[in-house]
Length: 299
Ligand SMILES: C[S@@+](CC[C@H](N)C(=O)[O-])C[C@H]1O[C@@H](n2cnc3c(N)ncnc32)[C@H](O)[C@@H]1O
Image 1: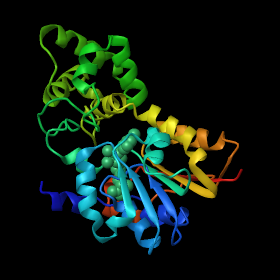
Image 2: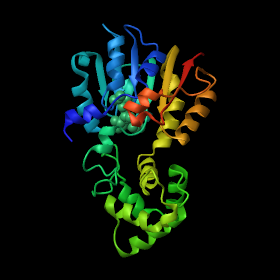
Image 3: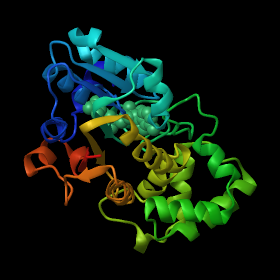
Image 4: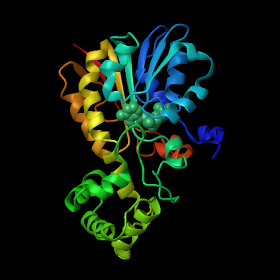
């Protein structure tokens, strides 16, 4: 896929709702913790013109490169930090900012990452089992598959993927890896397909979908990252500043809900999460499971 067609397939999720809830004002300073292709950042820059600023974090070098291409002319009001968003303290300090008017986190994977060759996120191509969003990180999915115990693998698949066949799949992986190293996405997809009896194969998704999702969450420590940003973000929000979190997975949404409600400095503005309407889901299937929760710094 070319860069321009990659950008075409990527549409920012819940754009109007998120940027509206952030209450973007001219001259405001905002943190986008998940720059990606810059879809949300671009809109924040537009609404905060002429002198508003965005500090955008992303740990994926390729995402940053394409995101910057997508931003265009407002580039001078944008500072990009290649860091994990959980490093908000040091990242903001580096660009000389202590507090911001709003923080946005749109977690997970962009369509760009899912579709890009050589990243190992998808079983639709046979390639090395990598799955690191930040390729500076030391542990790949192949290493998790090679080094985890059978119980650890089963837990990853069950808890992060909600995979009911987790034990069977973990046992098949351990058996296979005694014979040969599991290095490729195709190899893993095939092991899962054979381990799960045909009667348990799902109708609408590939049998390995949940295993791949679970491994990606484990490799990138996605739940720990989310927990940490939710703890730290209120320290960097101005009074009345808002934090908007878009998540795609019930596990993530539970963490967001609990952490926002449990912070005495925050007032939660979304009793129920905001979800996309039918027309957004029709035009952007990635939006289907998205949920937006918002809180305001009240104390
Ligand atoms: C769903 S995309 C964001 C899309 C973006 N809102 C847009 O409209 O273009 C998520 C991005 O966040 C990045 N990301 C995920 N977890 C991260 C983390 N812990 N720290 C920094 N970046 C992260 C990914 O690399 C990816 O580029």
